[in-house]
Amino acid sequence: MPRVAYEDASLTVWQGVDALQFIDGLSSNKIIDMRQGEVRQTVFTTTQAKIVDLVTVFHMGDFLAVQSHTSQIETLLEHVTPRILNQDVTIVDVTSRNHFCIEYGITNLNVGQFESLNDTTHGYIDEKYSLLIASVDSRRRVK
Image 1: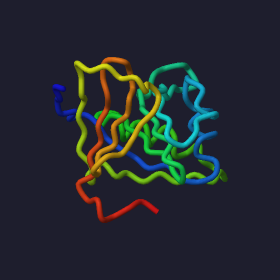
Image 2: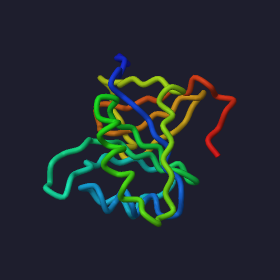
Image 3: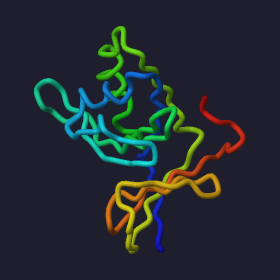
Image 4: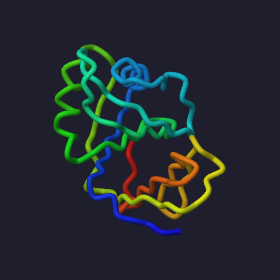
């Protein structure tokens, strides 16, 4: 299973009872019906339908882990933060506490699901590749 570093990846944690609905309202793909253990990709867009960033959303149960791109993270946060208003949504950048890679040349049978093994989360994005996120500090957990 070949792997390649994913240098342009970033990771934010989205918490609050409105987080899933908030992302669903600002992105192109339906994610409002996501359940814990699922992973989906969606595109954040402006009101003029311009792409802000392609993201991968992991439904972790108590929070959403959103993998985006380091080259676009500032633009993404500038786009979504003013739109939170009175909604119960908080966003924390945890990029520095994780490493990212793409695993390819494989056959994924669980597309749309993820699992965490030995401090690494394997997101089965497509039949042919997975997104791996490895925690560099497994003793600290997002609360």
